[in-house]
Amino acid sequence: MNAEDREMLTRIMNYADEVMPNVDPEKVRISEQIDKLRPILQQIAMEKAMPVEEVFIKYMDLATENAVEYEQKMKADFGDIMNS
Image (cartoon, rainbow, N blue to C red; front, side):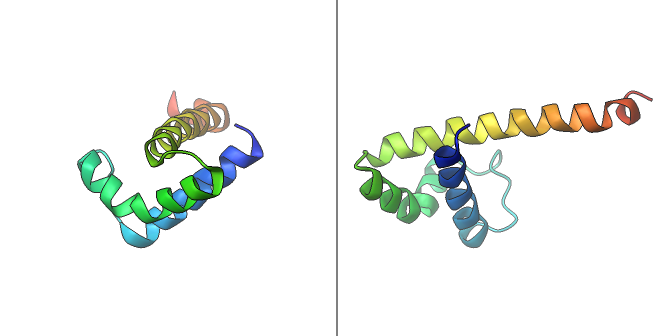
C-alpha cells in the first residue's frame, strides 16, 4: 500500500470512527455503511476526480489489504504466544 492509499484509508477510517463509533462492519449492512460514509467518499471522489463508487471500492480493497497486513504482523509478533 503506497502513502497516498494509506492516507485515503486513514481519512475514511477516522471519519467512520466519528460517524459510526463502536460499530461492527460485519453486522451493519453495506448500504448503511455507504450512507454514513457518503460525505467523505464524495469529498475524496471530488478531490481525485473519481466516481464515488470507485472510491468506495478502493476503500474496501484497502481496508482488506490493511486487515491482512495487520493479521500478518500479529502472527509475526505474537505467533509463539498464540501457538502455545
